[in-house]
Length: 281
Picture (cartoon, one colour):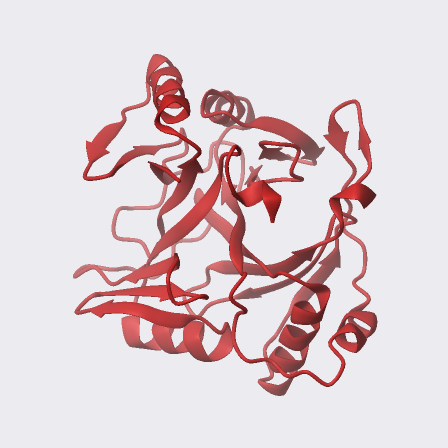
């Protein structure tokens, strides 16, 4: 979990525009295992530990179903503290007949599913960073079959009781329109490329395998979703201090990005229109 605290830049809470707030709240509490931290008329803040927001659901007055083949969210990824936690999640999803994808990425073991609006969710655990293989500053990753039986066995007789307190927003993976343009933007924000995939980049700080995934799998030059489309409103990047944050803001503004100051944070968007909240730890 050392990659999600200062001095690193890392991912924080994700904000989604949803079509049915009650339905999505029920899904994220009953199936994913969040707890409600705050509830308002058109907004619900969800947490794993009862203190830190991880996911915010908002239902605008005008909302369309999620548009296909656009830029936006591919998935957000919830990082569990242990392999046993992942095993308990597998048992929970199996009991609830949840359709899952699964992969062993060498650096991590991961489950994949979607919410009722079609937003992608990854739930994963990291292998010991000492076991990650780096060569020429790039980390080895793969998409291999997951040994789900061994993961379930690691959980013993323990049962799922919702997301454990140590759950973090491990990374965010985005559909973008141009990898070179997007890479330059996120390098200005302080990230570097950790590994490449076909039509994808994975970027991080502090030698994490990735805090950000960026792909053009919806097509190079994919259009932005309309303002009223369900899906990603914004995700958060957390900076260790004001100096580091202001340096990043200056660099993206030099690239032509617009950064707006809000009460306690800043907002901008990447070249594909993905909204970003910038704040300090």
